[in-house]
Amino acid sequence: MTRLGDLERAVMDVLWDVVPGTSDGVTVREVADALDGRELAYTTVMTVLDRLAGKGMVQREREGRAWRYRAAASREAHIAQLMLDALDLGGSRDAALVRFARSVTGTEAEVLRAALGAEAGLTGPGTTGGAQATAPNSAGTGAELTDRVDGPAARRPADEAADR
Image 1: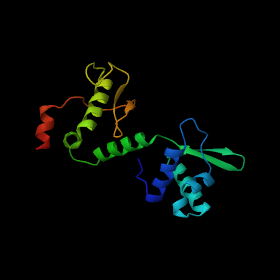
Image 2: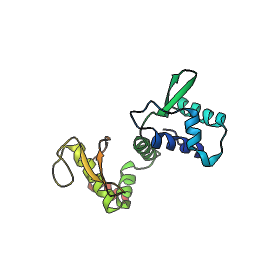
Image 3: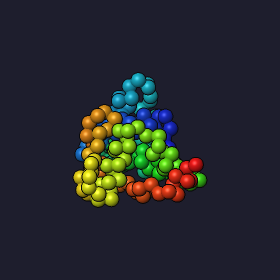
Image 4: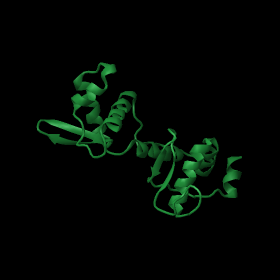
């Protein structure tokens, strides 16, 4: 997945924040207006949206003479793909996962446990026995965990040895 530049990220933030999943999308003018503190030309915003469409980050649909844009995937899906891409950079994927797991906060660890438990179909604290689990997010509210989590749900002795 492509990493985003500063302006591309700002435009994607507008699409992720302003355009709900059921929306028909927004026009270039609406995106430019939402980026009011940047004082960008209409054509600059149009070019960024066109490039993001070319990268597959946004979908666009013709409406009269204009285009309506919306994010092709959620912010969470994009971030998850960036994390997976980082794991593929080389070295030991297992060791990187172990280091990551050791670096998260207690609340984040609970979110991971709930997601892995739901993926494995486990029951117990923090899981619902299958399809979805709810765990606290950084704002302290419950968030449904519906994105697929690939990888082993349990640490193996080899993981710990690889981390040393």
